[in-house]
Image 1: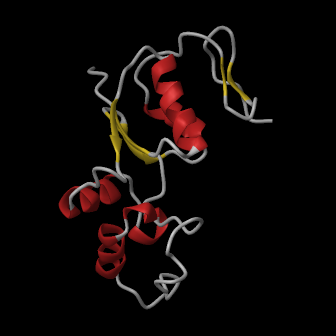
Image 2: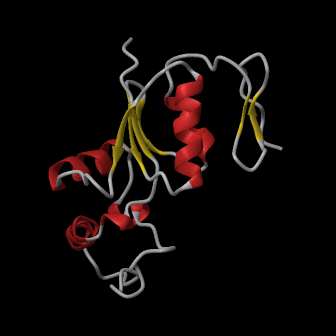
Image 3: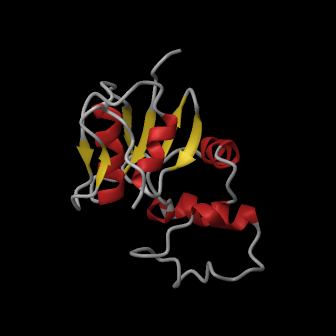
Length: 144
């Protein structure tokens, strides 16, 4: 199995930074796409949403975005209209979105990325807030 992983990343987001660090903790250097600088094409965005088993609405980020100003909470908006908004304002993409040989997932919380990494963690890992996610033996720590 290949370990080709892509992370749609925002370096200003702690959740995204934690997911990236867990991928690297498994000895994998992923393809990092800073989607605010290099947004995915519409076709790729639609494919990622479908492969992740999400709806466009489920991928929308509200905090720190023009979500409210654009009226995206309107339940009458179609998926196509929501994707139009995402394409016009990539900041609306919730993150991190991770693609691996094991699937595609919106990794919130960040430790959800562990389900997509086809390699063991090489050591302990704690999130930026200090929460231990992986123990010294490289095993996932159960959420407390």
